[in-house]
Structures are given as C-alpha cells and as structure tokens.
Image 1: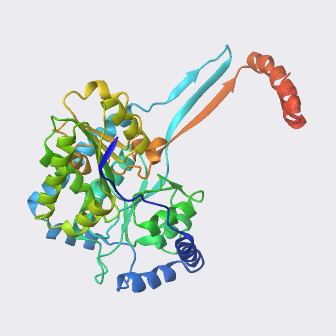
Image 2: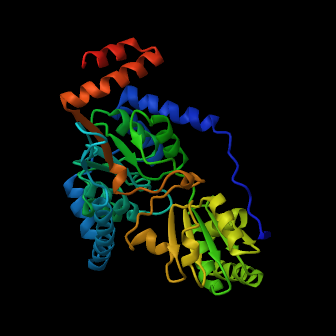
Image 3: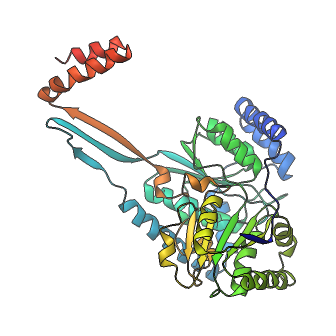
Length: 419
C-alpha cells in the first residue's frame, strides 16, 4: 500500500461543549414546548412563524412555483424509490406458525411503527431528494402518521419550496417548519403543537446528530450520521475523469466530506489526481469541494485486488464504487459498506437521486454493523407463541429446573403451575 495522496485523519473532536449545548436545547423544549421552538426560530432562522405546522395553502403555493418538468422529475424518481421499497417489503414476511416440537406454536408478525419523523436537512442545499428517500419507505411500510420537517430558508420562515413539494408527493401526513436539535427534541418529547413520534430518521448537522444520540431510547432512531464519504476501487480499465467526477461529487457536500480512491495502478492514481485538479478549476462548488479534497481526500495504490478489498472492508465506507473490468468475483468479498455501485456505468449520484436504492446511509464506519434506511427501518418483528396442554406439561419441568438453577424461584413456581 502506497499513499499518493494522504488525507487528514478525522479525529474525534472534544464534544463536551456540543453535548452541553444540545442538552440545554432539549431541556428547554421539554420545559417550554412551542415557546422554546419560537425562541430558537428567532435566534437561528431570523424569523418566527405564526404556526410551526405547514398549511395546505403553503404546500399548494410551493407546487405553483415548480415547473412541469421539475414535478415530472420528482415523480419519476419517486416511482423508482417506491418500487424498490415495495420489493424489499415483499421479502419481509410474517411467520405464522413454526413448531420446534409438537404442541408448541411459535411465530412472528411484522408490524409497522405507528408514527415517525422524517428529518430533511436544509443547510447548504435544498436536499429535496432526501424527502423522497425518507418518506417513501415509511409509506410502503404502512406507517399511519408520517411527520416531516426541515429548517426554513434563513430569514423567510419557509421550507424550500422544492423540499415541501417532495415531502407532499412522497406522502407525508404532517409537515413542520422547524429544524436543528430543537426539532429532534420536539418530536421526541412533544410540544403543544407537535405530538411525539416513535422513530426519527434522517441526516443532519452535528447538533441534529447529537440530539438524536441524546434522545435515543425516548424515541427510536435510524443511526448517527456524519459527513458524507465515498470510496472507489479502480483498476487500469477505469476512466480518470469519471473517477474524479465521482470523488468530487461527494466532496462538494461538505468541507468534512471524504473521497477515497483505492487504485491497483499507479498511473491511473496519478491521472485521477490530475483530473480532479482540472475539474476543480471549473467546478462552481469548488470552494467546498477543494477544502474537502485537500484536507481529507486520499489516493492509495494497492499491490493487489485482495489488498484493496481488505483495505475497503476496514474503511467501511458509506458509498462504495467498484470501477473495475471484472467486478463479479469481488462483490461477495466486500462486506462493509452502506451501498454498493457496481461497474463504471453505475455512478454513485444515480443512487443519490433516482435509481431506487436509499441514499440515507451509515457513515464513519457504522457500515460495519448496519445498513441504510429502508422499509424495514419502520417495521418491528414481534414474536408470539402458544402451547397445547400436553406441550405445556412437557416443557414445564425443563423450565422449572433452569429457573431454579438461576435462583429465580418465582419463575420456577410459574412453570410448576402448568404441571
């Protein structure tokens, strides 16, 4: 392994101030409800709305600002996302009756959560695609109450109109103009206007992530998401300009985003660095992308594909592209990633918007233990059991002995009552 370009390590910052700040916001929302939300709206957004909840009139006004093509594009992307979510849902089924032995009947039901919040970030860009990605699988899962929220455009009091339309098209049943840690607190504990939900999903800034961490337990969450990242495994067959474009597509998200190239050919690695520099010279978002690439971008030359696979599994990237001549033998060996993009034709940005897979994915090595948001994020697998009198009498002595072995005599007595 040889580093042609080494990025700075994303070390853990001292989060004490962040934790304390977020904790104070959560406590304020718990104690003061809507008044706290209005306070933070004035402080952070420069505008206080009459109502936190978005009205039907506001949604209709947002549609009026959209072109026919923009609405058609959202619908086309939505159809792919919904179709894939429906296919995933079909793989998650009830287990009505399984008998490990005669008379014992076991099973499970797949039950949607009753309510959720889909948090759509608004920071640097209006990420209306995220509204489609979060709301759609909740609809397919069968969640009855699907709340969505997003920060307002600073100084206006309004959610970006494209985000508002995407939320509505996807099927949100309630929409609220609120963001930040205060939104997470409000939907975790409730206010006069906002009823609490069962699950919160969606990415956000460090304050949103920390609020999700602190509210977890009171409410379910998807995962704690950090800055975006992409890792590309490439061999000599790859096009350096394509690689550069895919790396910079992630870098333009955020100064802390990370683009990584693992190449099995040194010439390709150096040509890609040159292609990155050429694109940065013309890219309108180069201010952010340059900062990300210069600080965290990495280009590594590996001696073999096996070494590239092992290195990738250690990284556990959010997005993983394999731009190589023969990807099939490699796929099964890759086990840690949020979403996989196979072959040079499959741009990661296709998954960001419209291919159908979900773009809300685990970052900072969370792909070691979880996948991304999907229809199952909104489903519970709940077991049940029943027994015949004969099976109960047969099993009870075993449970009696095991309970006594643990010293739990009340458990033993409950078993004894059956025989």
